[in-house]
Length: 119
Image 1 (cartoon, rainbow, N blue to C red):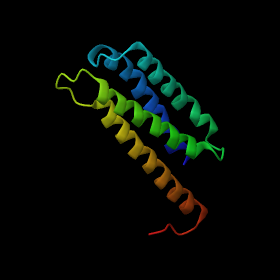
Image 2 (image 1 turned 135 degrees about the horizontal axis):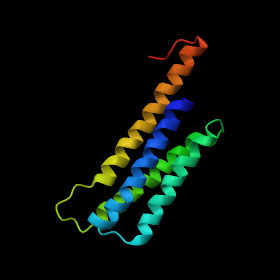
Image 3 (image 1 turned 30 degrees about the vertical axis):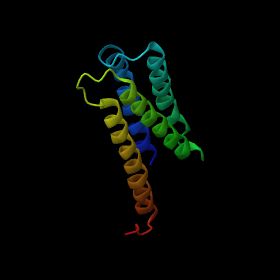
Image 4 (image 1 turned 60 degrees about the horizontal axis):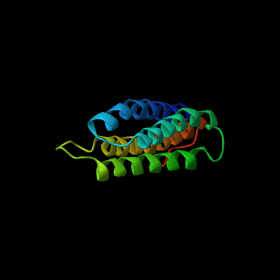
């Protein structure tokens, strides 16, 4: 599970970093919003270091919620010149990837431990 969840978080951090110039230039967002995205990207990079901790999964879900909220804010406040809400779409995609990493990571651990996977 550690490898899958860490991979999702690192890829999400890359996506957030690459989204910063897009939301500033094309989306017309204020500079502080870039700081929020940069902080979320830093959290996504640092969080895999805590993969063995009991609070890792809830913290990952909290990060997903914050990225979804940032995507919602971007959608609600963008100048909307016919553009797609890409940050929100990517946030939903990474939330689904986070769920899949947890789900399939746990199933892989069960199989590795010799227990029959549910379902």
